[in-house]
Figure 1 (cartoon, rainbow, N blue to C red):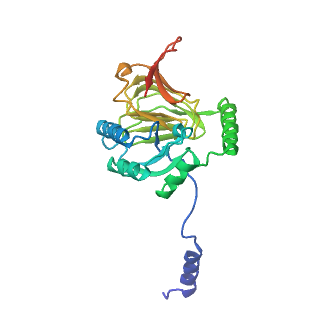
Figure 2 (cartoon, helix red, strand yellow):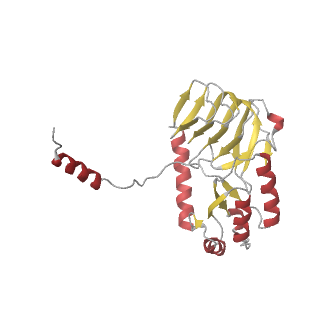
Figure 3 (spheres, rainbow, N blue to C red):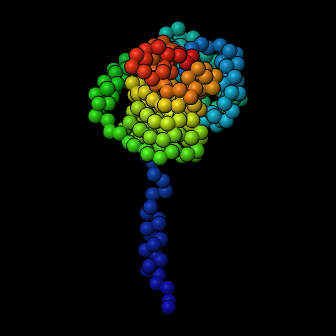
Length: 261
């Protein structure tokens, strides 16, 4: 049987007309390093301690540097040195957010991308977005997972709360745009409010997490909250100058917690 040249030419034409790539957005959680001072030596010391306690956790991870707390003082930041320190710790700084105009220009001259200029108009847009988030939270759907989340698995609840009626193993990730409820042991990583909802919370009956995050604010657990390990807790973001994560016992009168800073 002789091959049909027309068939091959048509196939070649289809291949030629196919786009060589697809450009789209995706929800990828990126850790944020929020600076409260510009002393690079002190920052390097603390980074060494953090990465030493959790080796490999942020290895080769893209990191955004948050300059919001330094904006008012307009402190000079030695970005070339900061970038070198972060890379020596295994991190990959990709850009900055917040900060004064001078700080942003300095970051750009080092090759960092400025993510979102801090203009008054942008702040108004963020305020509107936060109000919209609060309004939509009451209408948020819920995703249920009724089996254990095993090491290496990632569960994401887009536009929803996430309820897991089993344990989350070490090495697993559970992510939600809203709240996360784990009715079992939380031994992996939990990231709530992944798109910036600062009102989101994490609840679990057995707290042994590797990492928790609310709206991009991260805190590794090993160094701070042994007090609550293995106990039922809730985790939320206290909006203040430090934007601290709070771990508090679950009870009807739960008003006191442990500050993670």
